[in-house]
Structures are given as structure tokens and as C-alpha cells.
Amino acid sequence: MADPLDDAAVAGDALMRVASAAGGYLDSLAGRPVLDHDALGMLAGLGGALPDAGAGTAGTVDRLIDIGTAAGTASSGPRFYHLVIGGVTPAALAADWLASLLDQNAYGRVSSPFATEVETVALGWLRELFGLPEGWGGALVASATFANFTGLGCATQWWGERLGADTVGDGLAGLPRMPVLSGGYLHASARKALQMLGHGRNAAETFPADATGRVDLASMRRRLDELGGRPAVIIGNAGEVNTGDFDPIAALADLAAEYGCWLHVDGAFGLFAALSPRTEHLVEGIERADSIAADAHKWLNVPYESGFALIKDPARLGRAFGMPGAPYLPAPDDPAGGHAPFGPESSRRARALPIWATLAAYGRDGYRAMVERHLDLAQRLKRHVDESPELERLAEVPLCIVCFRARPEGVPEEGLDDFNRRLGAAIVADGRFLAGTTVHAGKVALRPAIVNWRTTDRDVDLFAATVKELVDNMINK
Ligand SMILES: *Cc1c(COP(=O)(O)O)cnc(C)c1O
Image: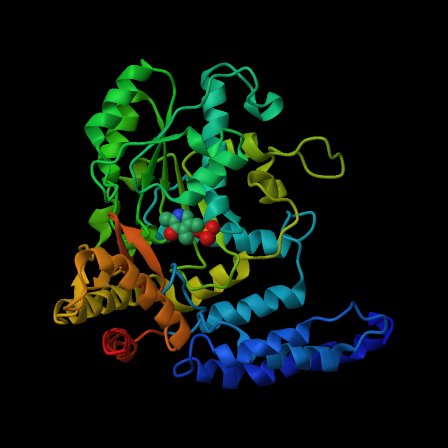
């Protein structure tokens, strides 16, 4: 095979091959191991030298399906609790395929009025879903890392303006360092965003009250006093990854208002607390933020890569990310031109399609029901932990994460970190579930996060039983 043109007629057939594999794969997710270590040997079949003559469409697609469905991580299934990983709702999955089929460039109206309109509606629906006031705008980006980048990019432009400087045109050279204050829950990706924006990741000063990282508002206030009215950025953390705990957003908004700061909130998954009356108090005051970062590929359960930033004054997006100097494009400050000039990317896939489809398909009520099911599942897992003498819970369970460790009889305190690290490795090696270790308040811990729409009581019960089984095996070895 030399030229894709020779295979033009089989493009539809290639998609059918994926579609034929899809049903069986999706059905297998409920019971299959998350990681099939035996199948990982198949990865060798991907390599070799770049072929001169290609194998053609059908054979190549079949090969990738075979390897992928066997050796891929079943993280879209109900038993992956490492990191914070959602699955893909049926409507989102189909819409994502459609996005590839149509291959729209969601740059703007000039490339696709369709993708632009879907994105406009999707952004509006996200704003409504989280109960933010009219007038807020946003950007669909690749991830929460990029959403943090987007919010903090707007903050940087705002900060420059306050100093009488044009950071967007002239950069940061010659300016003092932008003060960035946060509690100890600050996510590494917010630091990475500061690093990419040229502030350096060490620009963030954290004010933890204790070893968990809980924010110390009094010491943050002292630092703001010290800054003597110089413009500063506060980062609030709505949903910390070890425990799902929240900074007091309303109190941070008070500080931001009092000292004239920009408030950015990282709500990658925690923003979804707004969907249930049971948890909405956790994000109280978030509408007083200037920018919010979140992920759709986590709790909204749409495919990667799907983050979003929501911005109170959407004109800031154009000021921070507009791209002048391309006379063939619409003016960078023209909202009618489309969405790319209002975010960090230019050409983009139509990532709004799955967001639009899943919100259209399941609505506000469907998402509230899903989030509340996950809250219940986390409480169920918490009960399992509390009722198991060999397990010790290390934190409250305000949302969807249960932070705990094994503490079996006979293992001394100083041996627990090592024991739990080995337990984490045993869970990965076992493969039935996936949950990683972290360090919480100085202790090695597991912190399963439940945000997949497929996860049920049965999965959570089996997970608890599996952890206890692995602990028993380690003790009795
Ligand atoms: C997951 C996460 C991020 C980063 O998200 P990506 O989509 O992986 O870039 C940022 N902040 C928090 C709190 C997160 O949980």
C-alpha cells in the first residue's frame, strides 16, 4: 500500500471494524481486569522499523484494535480509582467519534460555524450546570492543567494592567515577580501553569495550617498586608486530590475582595460539588472568583482531552490569548469570530461535541443523580474501611475520595509506609482494580477516587474485599 488515496473506499469499513469491536469491549468493562499484565506483551507488536510499504487500512486498524482492546488500560470501566478518572458516557462516546468523523477545526467560524456554535452552547450549559451567573465566559481546553494555564494567563494580563504594563505584548522582563498565594492544597499543575507562563513554579507561596495542607488564612492575610496593596493572585483549591477536601472559597473571596486580588479556583473535579444540594456548600462563594479551572474528562465523563476554564470577565481571554498579526483570520478581539482567539490554542478538534451531547442527553438531573451516586459510593467505601480492623481511614470523606491505609496488626508504625507502598504495588500487579498511593500528612496512603458513571455498589464492595485479600496475603507470606 503506497497512498491513502488507494484506500479511500474502505474508510467507512474501517470505522465499522471499530464499531464491531466496541460492543464487546464495552460489555467487558464491568468484569475485566483494569490492567491485563499478560496482554502487555502485545505492545511489542507496535514497533519495528517504519514500514516502507504500509500494511493498508483494514489490516492496520484490526491490529490496533486487537492490541488496544487487550492491552489498553480499562480506565473507562468501573474499577479504575487511581488519579481522578471518569469514564465516557454513551452519548459522549458517540459524539467523540462524530468529532473525528467530521474532523472540524474548531478554530472559529471561518473554519466551522457548526463547531463554533456547539462550543458556544456547551460553554453556556457548563456555566448553567455549575450555577454561575450570566456574563461569565470560558474556553474549552485540553485539560485542567491548561485550564489553570488559561485562568492564570488571564490573571497575569490583569496583573500587568494593574502595574501599567503590557505583559501580553512585552512579557515579564523588568517587572517584579507576580505574587501568587495559596493554601497547601495547591495542585502541581497550577505550579506547572505558572512555570509555563514565565512566572516560575516557585512563584506560588503556600500557607498551610498543618501537614494536610489546609489553608492558614491568618498567615495568608499577613502576607497580603506585607505586600502593602500590590496586586496579587490567590489560588483557591476546590477539591484536593488526596482527600477531596476544599479550601474555604468564600473566605478566600473575602480576602481577594478586601485586598483587590485576582481569585483563581482550581476545581478540576471539585467544581462538581455544585451539582448536589448535599455538597454545594463546599463551593460556596465560587461565583465570586475571577477564574475557575475544571475538567470535563474527569467527572463529566467525556473523553480526553477535555478541560475548561470559566472566566468572569470573558474579554480578558481575548486580551490574554488573542493572536494578532494573521490578516487571514478574524480580528482577535471579535467574539463573533469564534473561540480559539479566546484561549491558548489555535486549531483544535471539536471537543465541544461530547460535552454538548452528554449534557443534552442526561441534563442537569442526570448529572446530579450520577454525582450523588458517587457520593454514596464513597460513603459506602468509607464504611468498609471503618469496619475493617486492618484498615485505617486518614481523612473525612467530603466528596468522592476515600483516603486510607492498611494498618494490620503486627506491622509497627515505622513499617507502615513501606507496607502501604508494597500494597499499592500489589494492587497494580493484581490488576483487577487500580488505585495508587500518595502521601497524606506524611503517611503513605491509598486514595481511591470514584467518578466513573459505570461504578456500582458491587465494584466498591469487591474493591474493599480485594484490598483486604491483598493485605492478608502480604501478612501471611
Ligand atoms: C486532575 C487535576 C488537575 C490536572 O488535570 P489534567 O486534566 O490532568 O491536566 C488539576 N487540578 C486538580 C485539582 C486535579 O484534580
